[in-house]
Image (cartoon, rainbow, N blue to C red; front, side, top):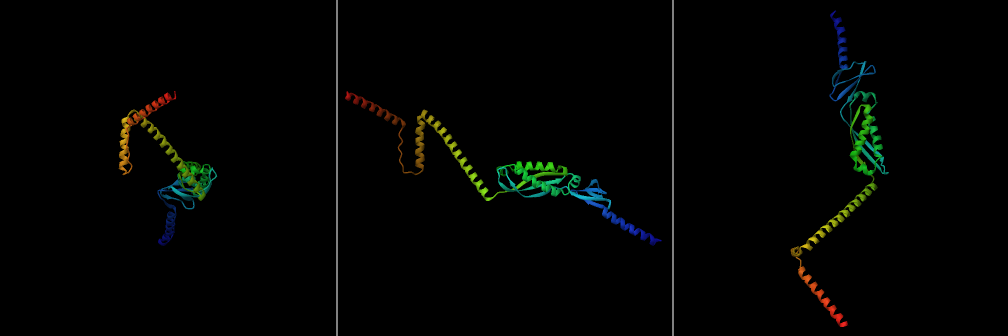
Length: 267
């Protein structure tokens, strides 16, 4: 009798152990389990220890961590008809495990393909200068479009970064020539503005010197100091402006007297 009981209990015990081993599942903190009951959605479980009844229930694990996806290089023709190759990086995560499993077959593949097509369509609407200088705005535009379209899949696109814009050699040389011409233009404008400002200051200085003749004499002395400091062999004799004015007056009076004498002799 005892042997019969043992022979009955042993298979039941083994079956129970195997049943529990297959029914008990452990989900990590960043994992969720989408459980189906006889093919129909039942609930989302986890994290921790859960029970899934074999042959009746099935479970699909979903990772809730942020996924970093490398978008392959795409051939893009910009608005100004320039062909470039653009690659990007996509950051997204699952926020609704139920939608991510039920609404789309493979959310990773679907998000990758959608990112590639969106990258080409958005960048094709902008010129090359925008691709090179306005990456932040383009990143935001692509991220908003992807986030809106993947919302029905339970996916949240948190960020998109354009990683590399590849140009051919001829376009690189053209951009270099354009940048050089732009620098030359700025240099000429700065030089012209400097000349204009210098002319205004020189005009103000001349007006001050006209009202203060002693200031001009001080300027003479300063010029002599600068010449002497350069160890030059040039000898400069400054003449006071008053002496020059006296000489001009005398020469003017002499010319007037000569004219009068000439006129009297002619008579």
